[in-house]
Every structure is written in structure tokens, then in C-alpha cells.
Image 1 (tube, helix red, strand yellow):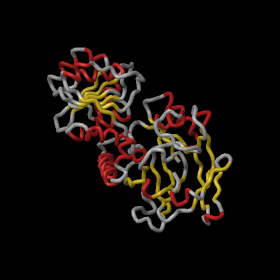
Image 2: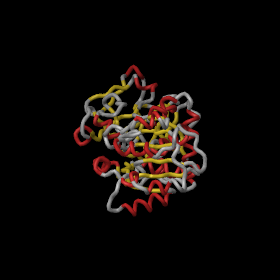
Image 3: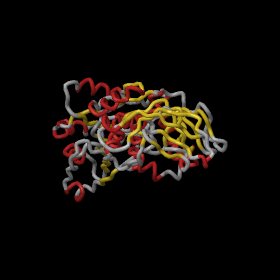
Image 4: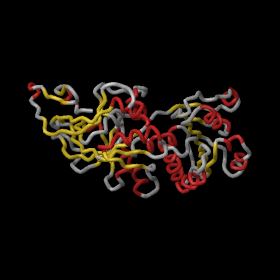
Length: 363
């Protein structure tokens, strides 16, 4: 995402080289390495490391040195052309990450060299070593939290935060049930809810190392960790003798798993769907709508950010609150595998084939 004051002056040539038209009277001062794609398809066919020239920093722009950028499933979907938002070609991959401000435009007062920042919107193109962008396209994060914590704060923790605050008025002692409890969002839900005094019932798929995973999620603050099979057993009756039925359900799986969440919600509760990992339709018994007044909602963090673009303080307030939890040790980033930027193919392969650890490109 180039600074708007120089976009008109820059055009793309050949294999990623860029040239400024003489009439623009702008000097190219720096260059960067970027992971670029010029068509949609599998990442191993479409993504290439290229050298890109950077424009001079305009009055309202900043130049960033990217420090770290995760590889998320949404990034892979963008490369494949299956994500709802697709940047124009040629595009730089990556939607999330943290950069350090190294230069500011003459009219920029909100940032100083040395500040850490994260992108406001999707499609930023974080998989590069440097970038010049409009100052309004990034927000500040504290530099006294961990690098991986800062690099991964903008998507999954924000998704968890919004779902816990925007759909039901949750009070201490209330209950939330979610599937995908061990996902990156699921782990953030556990920790943010625990800090709200809200109890969580976390559904996971059965696996050989299930007890290790249960202990890990409990150490984060989970109250209950159950398998999908337990949703159809008397185990749930025992749980609901100790805690109230959930006012909120969070569904990232769909299919039968999402339908089973519905059966355990309290009357008048809300089920929020924010993913569909099973790639199957949500099983929806008519009786939960007719007789139990369950509300079905959807949530997409990217759309929330775009809807609130006119109120940057709301986004900044949420990110600051989450960073406070990180600093206090009450919100940990997901398990991450740092990968040197030059070994980006390993990070992409790891994201496609292994979903338990987030791979983070370190520049």
C-alpha cells in the first residue's frame, strides 16, 4: 500500500522493478525485498521474492522497516484468489505484522522514528522488508511487548475481543461456548474472557495428545475443555450443574460442530459464526429459532475495521487494551515458529500443512 501522494507517480515494470516518471519530481531513496504475486494460484507457483524501489516519503507518509509478519490462512486464500478482498496485481502478500517507523513526513505528528506500528486494514502487504505508506494506514503499538506479541495482535486477538464485547452484554460469571478452542482465535477468547470474569467451555477435536492440549488450554484460563463427542453426552449436563448455559456461542467450524453448539445455548442466546473450517453448512434445527429464540450472527474482523475507519480511536483503544493484557502476561501470542524472511517458502508450507503453530516471517 503506497502513500497516496506518490501512487500516481509510480508504475510497475518487468519483474517488480518500479520507476518514477520524471514529471513527478520524486526521488527514489530506498529499496526493499518483497514477496510479490502477479496472478492467483498455489503459493509455490505464484509468489516470488523481488526487489522493489521505494518512493520518497511524502508529507503525510511514513517509511517503515518491517520487523515481523505472520502467515495466516487468509493470506494463503488471497494468493489462491478465494478471499473476499483481493488486492490489484502486482500485490505484496501479508495482511498482518509489525513495523518500526524509520522516517516520517513533514506533516506527520502522530508518529516518531522508533515507534512500532501495525496495519489498520487488510491488503497492506506486510511481507516485505520496508514500505512507504500513508500515516493513516497504521496505528501505534507499544514497543515494550514481545515482537511476536506485537506482530500477531491485529487479527486474532481483535476478533476475540470484538466477539466478546459486541453481541451479548457479558457479565462476570456468564458462560461462553466455542468450537475451535485451540485455534489462535480460540486461545485469545479463553484469555480475554478470563480477564472479563467470563467462563468458557471450549470444544476441541479428539486426538492422541488430547490431555496435553487440555492442560495447555486450562493453563490459559479455560474453565472446561471438551471434545465434540462430549457435546452429545451426559458430560454437558454435569457442566451445566456448575455454570449457567452460555449466552454466547462462537463458531469457526460449521457443519455438525456448529449445530451442536446451538443445542447447548441458553434461550435467547446468540451464535456468532466467524469461520467455516469444516467447509460444510451449519446444521440449523428450526426449533432453536422458533422455540428458543436463538440469534444467528456473522463476524468478519476486516469488515469491522472498515466500518469503523472513520473512528480510529475505537480501533486504537481496543488494540491498546489488548497490548495492556500482553504486557501484564495475561494474553499470550499463539505458539509461533519464527522463520527467516529468506526462508518464506517454509513458512507458507507450514501454514498450509500444519495448523497448530503460527509461522511468522522475521525480517
